[in-house]
Length: 79
Image (cartoon, rainbow, N blue to C red):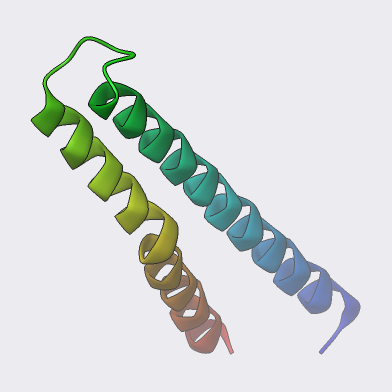
């Protein structure tokens, strides 16, 4: 692997890491927003808060795996 190919692979890995981290932080924000709604800190229906919290948990635990899988599939095609 030449230096430029290595740099491109490192840049791709760095980009994937940043995207996955941003998705996780977004999920945490959604969970906190959902809990705030459920606890009536924000005046919205309980069901809305519960749905937002569940979507946030999905975003934290499952979405990064799908994103990582897509990044790994892309690496295999480039070789």
